[in-house]
Length: 373
Ligand SMILES: Cc1cc2nc3c(=O)[nH]c(=O)nc-3n(C[C@H](O)[C@H](O)[C@H](O)COP(=O)(O)OP(=O)(O)OC[C@H]3O[C@@H](n4cnc5c(N)ncnc54)[C@H](O)[C@@H]3O)c2cc1C
Ligand code: FES
Image: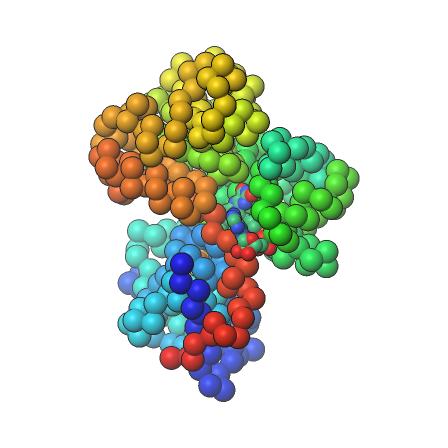
C-alpha cells in the first residue's frame, strides 16, 4: 500500500474567511459554502449526493474535477489522488476547502438531484445499551435526545469524543429508521484503535455522546426490482442489516440473499433476527460461511465453508440479473467485487462500502510528505 501523501496548500494560500460559492457543472446550480467548510460538506448540507467513503482523503471516492477556481486540498494520500490526477484538475472534495470566491466543479446533472438528508453537526445522544455481540464486535444503541436523525439505510455517522482521545470515525448505522430515533452501531475492536478502543473500553450505558451525520451514498436503489445479493464480513454487516431491514419492511418482492463470512461460531451474531426474517419473508435467505477450522458439528445447518469469493458459485452461479451490495474491509470488498463480476454481475449494479482506516491521513509523519504541486 502506498503511504505517500501530498498537501494541496499553495504557498501563501489559505481559505478566505468570506463565504464561497460552489457551482455545479453542467447544471449551473450554485451551493453556498461557509468559510472553513469542505466542498463535500457544503454539497451535503444542500442535499446533494457525492459518493464518499472516508472523509479523510484516504479512499479517493469523492474525486471530482475542479473546472474553475481554487481549493485548498489539505493533506491527502497519493493513493487516493495521484499526482497525475491532481495535474488534470481532480481534487478530493472531502478535504477540499474553497479558496476563491467561486469554485466550479464537474457534477453530473443526474447526480445533482437533491436526494440526501442534510447532515447535522452535533446530535446529542444517550448510550441506551452497549452489548458485546462477539469477542470483537460491540453493539452500541444510541438514542437522540432531540429530533430523531433522518437518514437513508446504508448511511453512516461520525462518532467519537476528541476529549477522550477518540477522533470522530465513520460507523455505519445497522438499523432502518425507527420512530423513537434509536440508532444501532456495530463497532469492531481494532488493535490499538483509538475510537474503537474507546467504544469497547470506555463508553458505557448511560453516557452521552455527540454524533454527526448522516453521511455516505451506500443506499438502496429504489428503482431496482432485481434479486439482491448482500455480502458482508465482521461489522460490515451493519449497513447490510439496515438496507435489508428497510427493504423487507417496505415489501420488496424479489429474492434477497445475505451471505455473511465469519471465522468461527463465536463470530456469528444476529442469528435470531436472521431466523425471523427467514420465517417471515419467503424470499429471504441467510447463508453463513465459515473460514476457521471448527468441526461441521459446531456450525449451524446450511452453513458453507470458505471465503465468500470461493463459495459464491454455490450460492448463485449467474449474477447477471442481480444487484449486489458488499460491505467490510477494503480487501474483503475488493475480493468480493472481483468474484461477483466474474459471475456476471453488472458493474453499475454493484454497490460497495469499504471501511477505509482513517488514521494515516490524519497524522502524517513528516517523512511521508511530498512537496506540494
Ligand atoms: C464509510 C465507513 C463506514 C464504517 N463503518 C464501520 C462500522 O460500522 N463498524 C466498524 O467497526 N468500523 C467501521 N468503519 C471503520 C471505522 O471508521 C474506523 O476506521 C475503525 O473503527 C478504526 O478506528 P480507530 O480510531 O479505532 O483506529 P485508529 O486509531 O484510526 O487506528 C489504529 C491503527 O489501526 C489501523 N487500523 C485502522 N482500522 C483498521 C482495521 N479495520 N483493520 C486493521 N487495522 C486498522 C490504523 O491504520 C492504525 O495503525 C467504517 C469506515 C468507513 C470509511
Ligand atoms: S478521499 Fe474523500 S471520501 Fe475518501
